Length: 227
Image 1 (cartoon, rainbow, N blue to C red):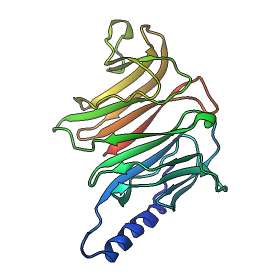
Image 2: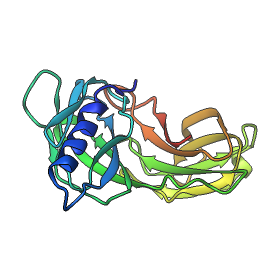
Image 3: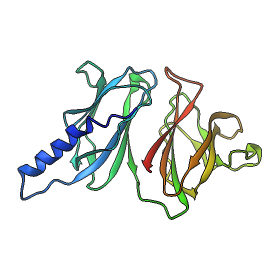
Image 4: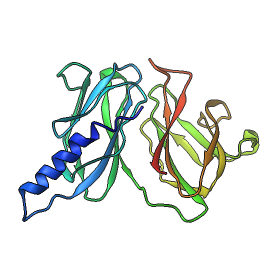
């Protein structure tokens, strides 16, 4: 689910700030948020005191929002309350893009800030980043293969990645892929994406996730960094 309408509140805030200062025009960054805490209730998300999304369920995310660059206050609270379970102030660079994950179990909920590279890949290619966002999953290896590839004879593109690990963007030819995640050092699949068609020019972030509540069956959430 996307939350496009409330993004206008943040954009309007940026425009208002710019109008207040002729000497120092306000520059902006792009920020999106993902609810990645498997046993947390639905949440509201605030940026710089303005509510940008409400009643966000597990695995839902906002679109990219334009926010003033510099320190940005990001708050997450259970829907309908004023109690912040996340209250962070990351510094956002001008003309840069970020994803903030509300991650881990609700008792240990934390913000994980990712710096997104939305630069278009070269013609005929796509770029994919892998995030280990499943708190109950073990260390894992990640395979990105053709759909029918034999895992027994395949080589992982990432090895021994633990919770919170974020890969660099991998550049691969545009095609249909299958992303399989195994317990590290084994061929035991814990996540199987099925067929994932990727078109030339796309940039994607793939996040390993717990099932709602916690634990298996593990899944994968795919975010469009660039279409």
